[in-house]
Length: 428
Ligand code: NAP
Ligand code: HSE
Image (cartoon, rainbow, N blue to C red; front, top):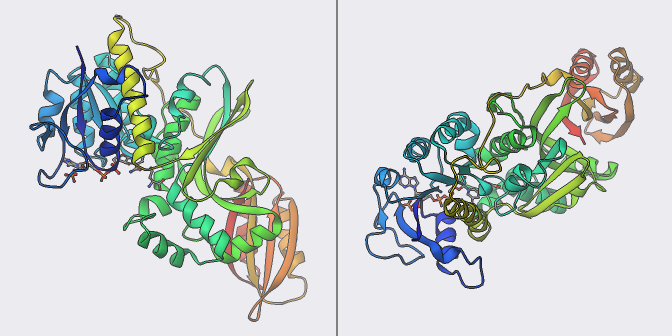
């Protein structure tokens, strides 16, 4: 007997998934056992890129999650509600769920996985992070015997596209964003992408898997790319860096708490993430004993996400065919407790800062003294030129705590010569 799918959503991801499942030749031999039984949409009259038997498409999504014949619910509609309620209802009804919805998982993962565990079913989410890149299952299975200490990702294609173009063309953020919107690479409302919120959802999910605990999204420090200027990109280039929006989850020793954050970062040109350009995503996982593993590929798009969603469906089909009374620990979520998140002030990083100052004698010395007063050691401090009447001074620090650095900066702001601090970026 075939496995019946109830798919919620027939947009980019839903259509790609249906197309893949309908074209099974040359793919996994279990695919023909999958039946696209119901597909839920908002608008019945919209033209669709796929053909489905009469009666398959419906606007009654609750009927799908309550239908006793549906084995697996595939949530690819997006948004928070009604997606959350429909997922929960499907789980309560004993159905496995596949979702691409990082926003819902990052916010409601606790109740979703608790409900799944109580019902003895699985929630799989390979497409939620990195689009077509297999990274969720590798973290849950292949890499799970390692002690992971850092996960560093370029997990948002829109911002990577914008930063890559700013780097290659010397353009301003606003101009490149407008062009990216015109070309369809950026959404009309780019907030979730350019303000780092989408990347924050994704690193919360990756951190949860890598460090075996739940992550409260409010604990994820988040800075977007709006303030990255072409001037900073040019200075970074001179200093041997490119600027990337990194999502980082890192174990802090010796406390074993976590730092989970998203911010634009100067990445050394020789670092493996420096060469990830355009809309591509990459995730670097570091652990013991494996060392470094990097996952690279398309982070979005119909084909990429269809690959990830269909692989989750396949895993569940295999599970449904295996009769067992206890859950498969490689697929279920066993987390009960929240991870401890380190205060931002304790985080250690290098900083790049650009000052605009009056062209007074001794300014560089005074800035250096303020940093020294707070134990901040400098890797370089240079006056790089002038902007009108103002001198431009660029500082790169050695590793410092965020707390010490910000105290030094507070003291520097009181110096008479300081006119503004237009840039402050972290260095990998
Ligand atoms: P989309 O193109 O906007 O499609 C959404 C689909 O869901 C549409 O078919 C829409 O129906 C249906 N839908 C939305 N709200 C509904 C409601 N309240 N009731 C009934 N139907 C509703 O979205 P998408 O790009 O495929 O993204 C889907 C999910 O995948 C999101 O969670 C997204 O974050 C995630 N994701 C997307 C990508 C990507 O490359 N697009 C990559 C990774 C993850 P109509 O067709 O009738 O409007
Ligand atoms: N808006 C997301 C991005 C889509 O730009 O990466 C994939 O999640």
